[in-house]
Image: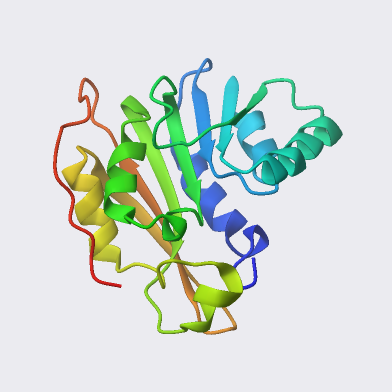
Length: 198
């Protein structure tokens, strides 16, 4: 949030999300929901929503949002998203999460397995930058990502790159909001991913 909080990309993310069409009983999964502020948007658009986080502290903040907003269709799970193999959804959302993984290409490949055939993966991330202070101040393992790297990793995971939006921030950073689609009937392939050098 020091660099880019939800308020700075919420409208762009919702613009992409609202262009997609889902069945009335569709499900959503948010990986790393942080303080849970995006969960009400998902709860309004999907029949069921699951939020996975490996931090009890963050899940407690998300629980407070769910309680305050009376979100009866949201389930919170304390879990490692890369190994919670039984969780799948029609729409998987990764908001400012990928740069916290030590191996983001492999992480994206694993998280893409959570997308049901015909479903969507929405990724919001910083574009590549050279502000190394973000490593210490924000705990970022990666200084954003090149757009073509995200597209390549998603394609390797059997997803098709779709629409993208870019948001320039006053602090000089740029946010990319990306949509990747899993074709109907396409289960995730077993592939090897290569991470870029940091």
